Each structure stands twice: as structure tokens, then as C-alpha cells.
Image (cartoon, rainbow, N blue to C red; front, side, top):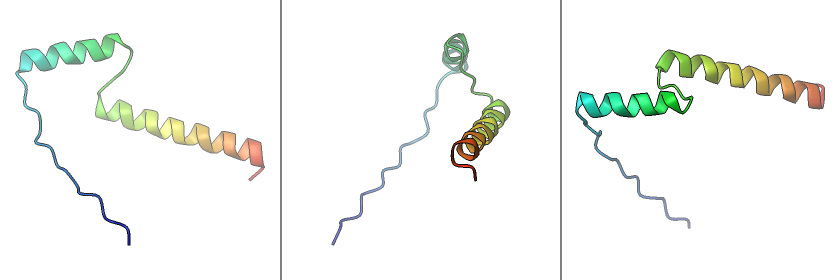
Length: 60
């Protein structure tokens, strides 16, 4: 019988607003976004693109 993996929950990281702003700026400088709406829209775009490629490749 397989042993279930133990789930570990980590506490939420709390940082000062200054540190948070620096990290956000570095993330955006690298070309990423942590905007929830933008992330959702990009995820939807990737889903559509993958489905299109799958249909094109397999004809379904």
C-alpha cells in the first residue's frame, strides 16, 4: 500500500511595503506580471493556443 505524502502548509510571508515594491519592480523588469487579472487573461490565452494546436495536429 502506498503511503500518502504529508502535506506541509507554510505561513504567509509578510514583508514591508518597501520590500514588496522592490520585488514587484524586479518581477516587472524581467518581463513578468503579478497582476491577477493579467495572469488570468494570459492563462486563458495559453489554453486557447494549446487547444488550437491540438486540434490542428490531431484534427479533433
